[in-house]
Length: 301
Image 1 (tube, one colour):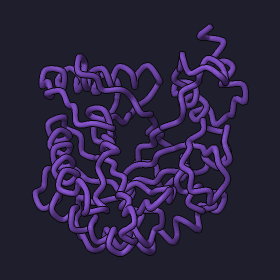
Image 2 (image 1 turned 45 degrees about the horizontal axis):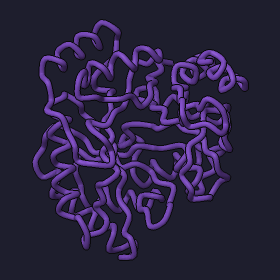
Image 3 (image 1 turned 90 degrees about the horizontal axis):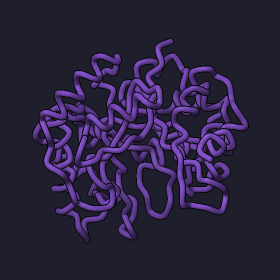
């Protein structure tokens, strides 16, 4: 089975997409995901076309299909609450889609939003209205709604909610990104993942899945906490995640790691090291290394 695997990588103003590709290659990836700027603010550097050309060349040379590369929308976008910053969220997501189009990226992952007290029905209808407005002009970029853990008033925590949004927006440029940590924290038993997939296929369709975020979870099932753990070091477990990653139905779908960086020690946040190279190798080998975190720390002593 062909494995399309990568992780979140940086995108800085100096090297932009070229730097993202180089970082992904250093992890042994054949895809990657990035923010086009800081996820918590609106600061954005102008897209450099020469760096795009260099990045595209490097991807071709290293067998990275650009169609599998993902952008993640900023956290500050909230399409579910129309009482505060609603127009800003709509316009900012339009701008991010424009940036994706310039970069040649075909998919952007979006947290559907939090209703913040307006109620589920009102929040879902706000998302539908916003997405219709955003997608009425086809920029060749698909929005992938991420499955959420259900923290606070988050929407997108159930397949039924996602179905409501997708059915009412009715756009070919709208799909879904599964997140294993979020599914687990929302109450989905990933040990019985086939049951979840059957329900998803009946309500939405497997063909709507455009990306999978592969994360373990620090918390027990149904916790609604959304705290990611390194692969095999959480409450989902390595074997369960491997079964999802290697599901034949997902062969052509990019899998993206968003797991925590490893700190120098349990008490220090001063130094943090990427686990992605090691986790991707574990996934390729289908073999869990229980000493991985200590090995990363020892390498960086």
